[in-house]
Picture 1 (cartoon, rainbow, N blue to C red):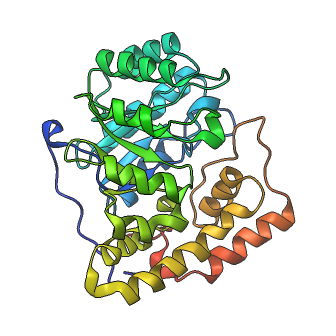
Picture 2 (picture 1 turned 45 degrees about the horizontal axis):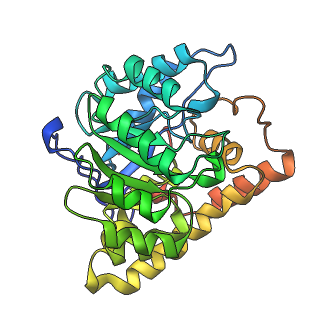
Length: 319
């Protein structure tokens, strides 16, 4: 069933030379079977459904559990996803790792698969000063076969990209943007001042999506796009239109209400439960994460059930 006012036309195919981060980008969940293998049939079906409503897919991001997947499993996810998308929309591929040498090795393994943009987190585990972060991303961008996008997610990596580092990196011709998932609206406002035609800025938090688009953000990469890509697109379009401010407020409220499912236990585990409720057998989160308890699962089910079904990407939805 089509949602109210939702855009249902698949985005136009783009050539790699034209790709700059923009629009609704879905950070795809990696469906893993009980035996640890990639459930390729589920992954392909998920991607076919997402392609109805998104401008790009981000494979092996945080939602895709890149840090927890064995290397060969991650490679299989990437290969299958790039094959299934087939150039219909840009593919963003996560390659960040704990340090420079490991990141460069991952780029060497993954960089030839056909992704349009490689997405790189800050290194994690060790505390890295600004000079080290600047050097890290500069060397990664110099080595990458395609452009890279910065990914600021300090709650996971415990190394944050500061404004001085981002300003420097934004001048690099191979660094084309940043996904900020810090949830800091003050930082995001400063990022929009750095934004340029060749350096795009995308929001990673659902609760800040409407205000961010209104203020000039180029798009979003939010986990909710796995569940409700039509809603994310409708909010993005309304927020970009000065004549739809009231509708944008309404859609932001709906988005925020649905995103409350991420408050039930650990957010990634809740995402897996919500996907299951919509018919997507993505499996459980990778150990050592543990599934939600029954009370938390019930809370997720209730939140999903309360949402307008027209926004939800159910597996049996072929519209």
